[in-house]
Amino acid sequence: MKERTRTVPRKKTSRKVTQEPPYKVILHNDDYNTMEHVVETLRKVIAGMTLKRATEVMWEAHTRGQAVAAKCHKELAELYRERLGEEGLTATIEPD
Image (cartoon, rainbow, N blue to C red; front, side, top):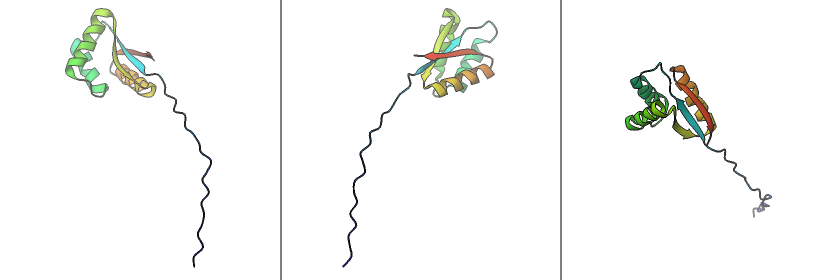
């Protein structure tokens, strides 16, 4: 007859999930880029950006000086800021 192995349960552990606050990607107005370039760049750089939303963000930045282009986790916000900068746009990030 086979001998059975008895498994003793491990000590229970608990997980704490810490969540960073979302970050805002803020597009700043400039006097150098065309409106069309800004809209095309927003659509190219920011995942899921529609033509309508890109136009709204561009117009708000144009008329108010800045606009929130996206809200996401910090690493993605940093990536968006970097890529917008590579396309000649000025963007900053800050916690929401």
